[in-house]
Image 1 (tube, rainbow, N blue to C red):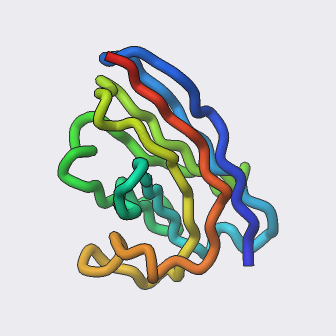
Image 2 (image 1 turned 90 degrees about the vertical axis):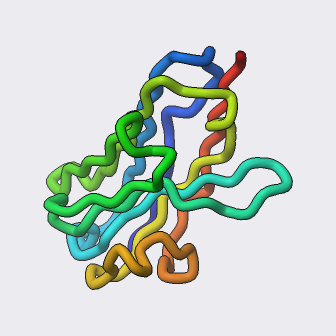
Image 3 (image 1 turned 90 degrees about the horizontal axis):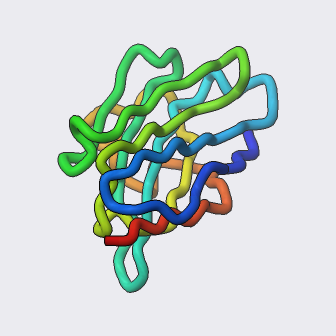
Length: 127
């Protein structure tokens, strides 16, 4: 198992960029796939992006394609989510989650596939 801690959230204006980090504890982090989800008030948790355990495969939600970029550094036990051209609709609590390495594009967007979650970080985008 791993423990996850998100950081980098904050209040920005529309059009700005923000970088979120997910730091993990434990030597087995490199064995987990990692994803970012988000949850806005009154809405269900929503998939944002997924990265394979090696970093060689990524998958994005439609709204994130072209604006967001997920990457990982297994030597530093971190996963980063670069968010550009932020919109007020991106306002939410962002969570990172760790899951098994065998997830594919048909199920890596499902919160139920991930067993470890961070506490979340608030991202607020003003218009």
